[in-house]
Image (cartoon, rainbow, N blue to C red):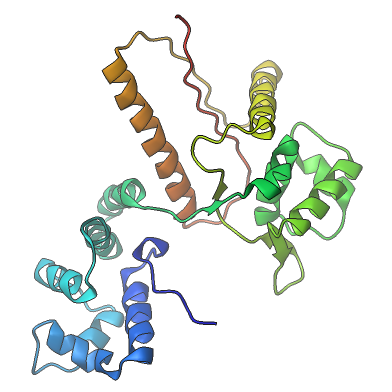
Length: 275
């Protein structure tokens, strides 16, 4: 099967992107050799520059711009590449944090759009929780143990049915070690979907929010509410900000460099309190 064209937004390391870009195009066109790319970057007498960059040679702002031209990156891709280079080459923790936040804001994280035929995934709130749990938990067919890790707790029967559904929908599959793991890092429904199953899923999520408040859990949580008055124009800007924030959250999780050790639910609500 033919490999897809390398997508800059899939990468945390610009050098890996450069290596995959060169390998992809060289497979089809031998003019994309490393020495040829060095010449395209304006270094006719330096055959090894591209290779040196892959081996951690620092890329200056001048050559960042040249790489962008050689790679034929679009405006948004170019901006992401620029920040990714700065992030990978950052020399202090503060500098790295600044660029990491910019990467999160700029990233267009790929996500699998759920087809209507698999909306049964949303039929029970715990399907999503179990799918996320399997990312951090090596499940060995102990359904009772898996059920106990879910909050609020579910039965072993529910855990078994959920795992079976996730397998059927190809949302989890066995890894090389034999454990079931998610097949996609991020999934979503298409914007504007109003399916009743999605509504029910959202309602059950809100019920869990109520439970988290009532139980006064010792685990980290952040729950706040705001009531505000706003103009139609301000509302459009606010909705845009919410969409942007959701994209940034997906990107932050996608780019998280540390191994996950817990599952959280994030709910964002904006609804009218007056006519």
